[in-house]
Image 1 (cartoon, rainbow, N blue to C red):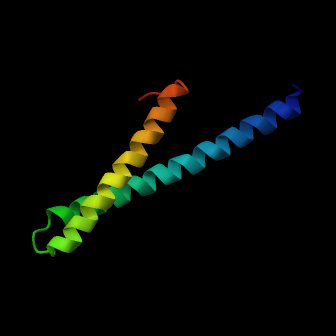
Image 2 (image 1 turned 90 degrees about the vertical axis):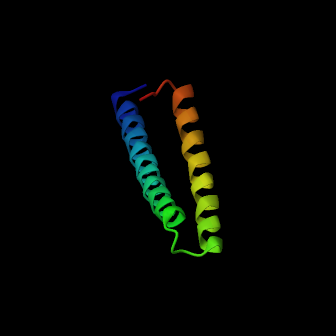
Length: 76
């Protein structure tokens, strides 16, 4: 692999990592917001149930990202 090809590969990997980080941050924020709705008893049961469903979906997505990262040798 030439130095230019290596640089392009590294730049692409960096860009993808930034995009994944942005998605993870968005999921964490959405999860926190959903949790606040679930815990606020002044909200209707229907709204709290939808927020709980969304929080569970977000947790599943974050779990999938963590599992994929672990398989690639990236751990926290």
